[in-house]
Amino acid sequence: MNFSAIIAVFAAVFLILASHRTEGASMVSLLQPSAIMIVLGGTFCAAIVNFKPSTLMNALKSSVDVFLDKQPSHMKVIDEIIYLSHQARVKGLFALNNLVDSIQDPFLKRGIQLSIDFNNPQMIYDILKAEISYDEEEELINSRVFEALGGYAPTFGIVGAVFGLIQIMGYIQQPDILAQGIAVAFVSTLYGVGFANLLFLPVAGKLKMNTREKILLKEVVLQGIVSIQMEESPMVIEEKLLAYLKYHNGHHSIGHKKTAGLYGTR
Image 1 (cartoon, rainbow, N blue to C red):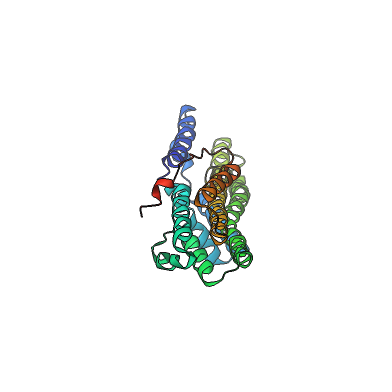
Image 2: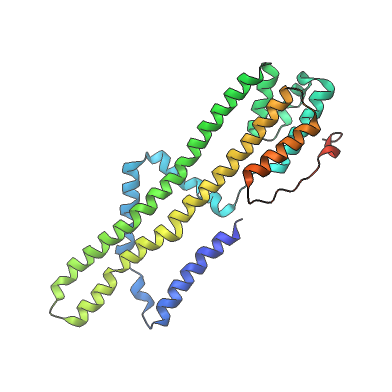
């Protein structure tokens, strides 16, 4: 569970409400069902025009991962690659056929199966590289959906505000009612900007980061599979994968965990 993200959202909402209350304003003035209907209804209807309903649903489902914080275990997969490389080194590549069903990572499992079926590292590299590119594009669509939602929401917030102002123009001769009506009308703008900058755009950014982690792991797996096919030493493969992971992961801290002790265990 990504508690930091959940706490951040609730903290932001609390600070906004607390600031509103500190100014002596009524909390009821922020509860405008019609404004929510205009902002969220218009935003998602515009998204349906832009994207297929299935694409929108997939993006909404993927947003759950932002708060559950499901991150791939890079070191666990590297451990598995090193173990497989050791088995291939000792018993031969075809011996991995007995271990394929026990491989946890789907991409690694497919790559090892291809290595057993085809003794052609370049062909395997091309196939898996194409799959990585396709998967990356599929993953990025989810973040693009939320970026679009973040663009539509403020616009419909303005639409709601203008709609409210049009309604209260009939009370222009009554300053008290007019002032109250203007405040209520701009609640739509608050909803639009709030949903965009507190929810939609941050989720889009987090989904991009998650996609980067998933693609990075697949790149590491691809390097491992090709190295196994080329019968490189397990120790060399380990150093190569850890270096690759560290180089591409930049600011993340990558522990240099030696896996040589796992060669004899499984």
